[in-house]
Amino acid sequence: MWRIHTISFESQWTPLGGRLGEIPADAQNPPDTAMKTLRAQVLLLVGTIVVLSGCGTTGSLTGTTPVGDTTPPTVTSVLPAADTTVPAEAQISVTFSKPMSIRSVAVSAQPQVAFGPGEWSADERTVSFRPQAPLSAGTRYTITVTGQDKSGNALAPQAWSFTASAPGGRAGAGAARLAQRVEARADPRVFTLFTALNAAGYERGAAESGPVREAVRAASGDLPLKTVEPFRKYWIEHPQPLEAYVRYILHVGEPPEFAEQRAPQGLERLNRVLAGFYEAANVGTLWTAHRAAHDAAAAALAANGPAVIGRVLDYTRTTDSLPTRIVLIPNLLDDPAAAYLLRQPQGAVFVVGWRDQGDAIAVTYLAARLVLDRLPDTAAAELRRTEVLFPLVREQARKEGLISWEQVVRESLAIAVTARLALPAERRAGYLQQPYTRGLILVEHFARELDRYERSTAVLLDFVPDLLRTVDLNEEQRVFSTRKP
Image (tube, rainbow, N blue to C red; front, side):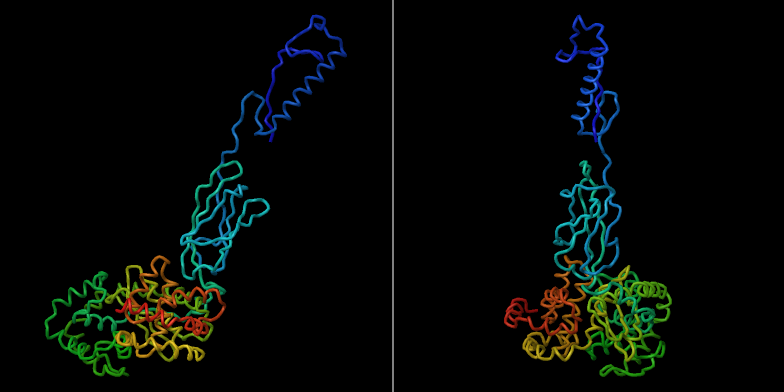
């Protein structure tokens, strides 16, 4: 645009060759020809001034310099959209309200992402950045964009967040396949079992207890010894993993009878002990008092559970037939991080600990266990090769109910997948340390190797032999010797 300056000549004129402001005596009444020449010179002079001043903003003919463009740019749209779940190969696109200074625009990500160079639209209002490697599935990313428009007006930093799903998978496909297959409900049998456990001295996760567990523990603390002792004695005499007790209670009938239908080996007649405790401890009244809290937790699981389980299906690229029904049961009397899986011929039951707003970690973990229920035959050779590590962790693994090397491998991989999908990057290392000390010697190896899996297009189960093939036995033994639990 041009800047136009006004010039006042105050009736001064000069013929060709004279100086502005000097009026020759013989030119007081110039002839017509001289006057026309003078007018042409003045017009030429004004036009030259206008052309040579063409470097600014158009103003008025008032002798003042107008102000330039001071309107800052804004972001009018972004891709991926805020708070969505997208494929791990998704690119970042930002559209601005006006053309931008290309060199000034930058995007950053938290957790950190390496982006390729920006690709701009012809009107310089939209820029796209492609990650140089797939995003980490299950990770929530926050993107921030900064820059200036062509007049130097700064964009107020804009930020938005989204979550990455499995590479090569269609986000949300797993959840869609679970339609009408997932339900959630409260269960008085689970409530009775964990009321008895808390009364008998079960302490896991007590420091993180919610109000329901605290109230039940307070009520149980006043029970007479004769009410609590039969269950405590049974628990001491039958040292099975807690998941076995949960599996048992879900096989018996409803209270107060707890009719035994099919008892897992080693827990026979537990139903009689629980029936006696239910009556003596007045558990029915406790259940009535806390039923509403359990129903609310079940409603939250019903609302969020399909999306969480579906994310696992997307990540593992599971295409096989799914259980016809998955039942989610909240357990407000347990460690908030606890999770138990019961497989049934046509379905599965997830019993999960509970925090105030729920916890996707437990549901993610149980869904991963369900998907990894059995390793493919193609993994047999690598299972045999790596089984030399089993003697190092056998004692610890058996305390977790894992009696074979394949179970250790499956459990380690399930926890690695859970860390990938349900925790931000900065929390994963801490989450993986505890399972390692419980005998899951390959959990950190799998957590690293999932990067390779994500760059592939394979189904996770089919990729297990590749995950095992890179296990360095000498290195794993060396590291274990320095961290022996």
